[in-house]
Length: 223
Image (cartoon, rainbow, N blue to C red; front, side):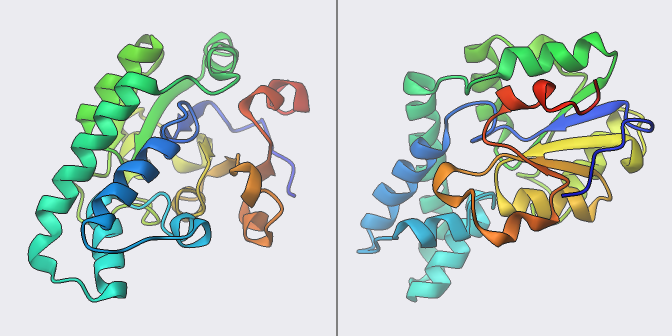
């Protein structure tokens, strides 16, 4: 994979779900419970196919795939949000390396942003639960944008708030849709896939692929 050039980089932007907090299992549970009401069950490969999409797009995709009347879409989206927030608030934990990597970039005077597909109501829950809100200079959500990831707008908006150009930014993602969004924004991207997805060829567009956030400072990048 291409080596990360540190010369221009002075801004870091993180995804949230599945990267900073182990929330993906609870999003998956909330989605599965909601789809079950419509007699729909997804396998692991199907679920990973749409990881990183906003809930409204996730629902739209699977309702279209299984022929469910879209009249139920708004209620299903609200149900997933409610269930996911409840589950993450109760059970979500920081993923390994979160505090260290935030400190790593803070010590190097990087501007730090968060660009997520999740609603700001969940962002508030996660930042408070993990006690990391003070690290972020800008927070953007794609939940109310015309297009979510893999569209780059949420990353471009975050960079604009941070007064950074895309070429100054390095992003951290765990999903394929998020990686495509970061690369479409012309930013460097470090991807940390789910363990069962790690060896897939689709991560080849990333600038660096790691098993966890803990590996990053030790990788020699931006030393």
